[in-house]
Length: 152
Image (tube, rainbow, N blue to C red):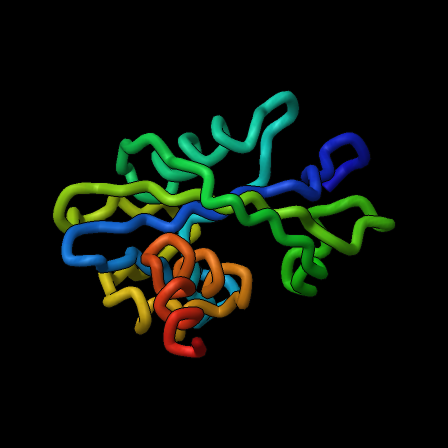
């Protein structure tokens, strides 16, 4: 990317929670086998809630009002995506949201994804490739409360 065209190191992650507590998991085209929730960088001047709504529509064709999960994570940018950011940028700030939809509708995938599946929440948390994604799924599905209660 040319200078001035770098991505902002601020992104959103949207857990799509459907009927029966199932979670939509997408598989990326590149890198192969990378499984995730809806994700994407903020456009210039865009807020995290605006980006969450836009990314949900772009990546799945689904329309829902994403709600903040109260999770903001900082993590090292994966080597596969480092070239999208300015050379001195090493970390991304990710704002997590949940979008609740009725049933388990078939998404309309964009070009960056090759497969999708509606999985039980615990299975989805284990299937995704990013620990911040897994934490957001657990929070959206209420599994983190279950884990805390079982430890008491």
